[in-house]
Image 1: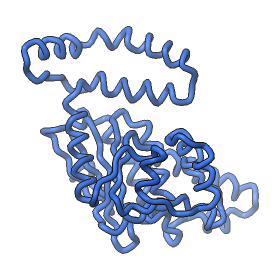
Image 2: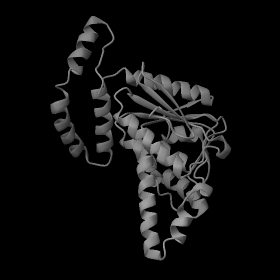
Image 3: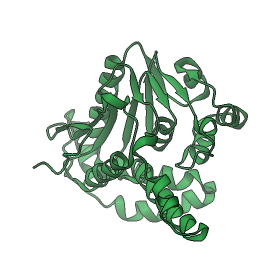
Image 4: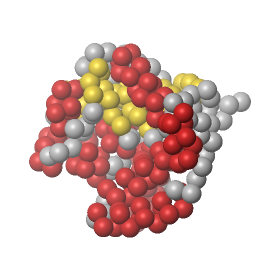
Length: 278
């Protein structure tokens, strides 16, 4: 059995291009996530991160109507955690562990060594925004309906949107507005605010664009690509000086890789470079 086999996900692993396509496919629930689905997602992303045959990951939906409709409350264990805990303190510990593990699953896109391109479409509520903001590159179709829905169900978003969304867009005021009101916003507004880098007419066109982008990234040096992601992630939450220092230390070793002379030689010879797996 493939190590990428997980329920509610279709997997297209192209060893020729190095692109792994993770397709969410739970039509009965419009791709709403229960506990098993986010646990599966973490296994998939952790496996891809260490797979030397994978150079870039694309995440999309199999459904025309929705990318992800949020959290499946009927398949969530929160109620039993509280009712079976015995007292408030133990319930709090149970909930904290659950939230931590859920956060780690969504963060697996961000901490993966491989770039992750997310292609959203249709209904993209709640958890969809968590997933999107954890990805490296976000694309969407024209019919995408985004919303940070958590305040409408009586809680503060706790899986990453409140922390990542303000850093993904250009306006802190806008980020707070959509999180506090839970209002829907469309693809054009998401593009204006910088949540996505491009909008496509259909889901199919969006996914195809994401795959072509992934294939292009996969042709680059894996040393360079993985270092670029790592250094940008590190620098996002730190000062420029701290980021520059870590870049010095990182490249002091990574510049000694064979990838630099191979890229230069290939350029002069007018051929495509051939980089070893990483």
